[in-house]
Length: 427
Image: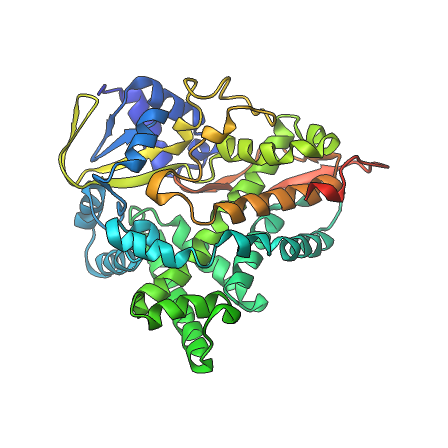
């Protein structure tokens, strides 16, 4: 485990969510991967090699609740007092109920229940509805000389997950605001953002509880009642507590659109930046592989957090029990021992399926089929409608934080084209 002051400084800027650092963090993740198997950064440890990250994601000694426990959480909590500490405790206590933060039998139970919402046959049946949402949103795009595609990139996944969970269309924007506030929170490291997340979570939670209560009064149950009824069946069967049910709705709404937004927006930008847009417009058969390559290249969720559940010896390095460990999915996805020319966007890449963007092992992304479908259908329509799309800026603004970086806007422009080879069969 090497001590590289320059690398530590660069990583600290990423974890501080400095916009310039978020603009292109991949060279830093590459340096981390090349430096050592395990890298100490303050009170945390990091891994970025594909073999290490994949192995750690499967290793039951690493617990999946870094924001509610672990070395980093304790350091942050010790700096806070009064309302700030109350906010941190309440936010982390509720988020600890998320299925993604659970381990062992509790995780397996919650995951089985959550998978009711994302059963492959249910997702496959959504294809036509997603296409309708895509076309409706694109009808609202102002095709001026320059127009912004970021609203499309976040509204599509938000509409889809909202429809799955029976959320009224008029409520989606406030859910997006709450999700943004929660997404900006970095485990309490920025106090004003923590307090915004605290307020957002309380409103988000109250909304979810009211929605569940309305469904309970209606008495809807079973397959024909939709996702709400299916999840409430789990509660009725004494397998899901009321608090777990609320947490399930919140995390599905939050995670169900934030990561796909990053895939679509960043994916469009990267395809245009690397001159692959017109290639896909001319050859729609390459689109499924292109979506996988964008998942690898963009890595919508940059890292996964874990806490060492016991003292662990890893590649000659001792990781003490309770240490927060960050597994760099972005670094693993550019590992040259797995991917040829990993820093090159190649929409025809043959080795792409080895990427870790959707997780690995017991915490494999529950919504992976939905994310792939939304990404494919969104790009299919955009390529068909705007085959000559171009970037309208050389300086794009990035926000979010180290784990969920994303474009703040996506200004583009296009030249009118008389025809395109892209057709409906792609979808």
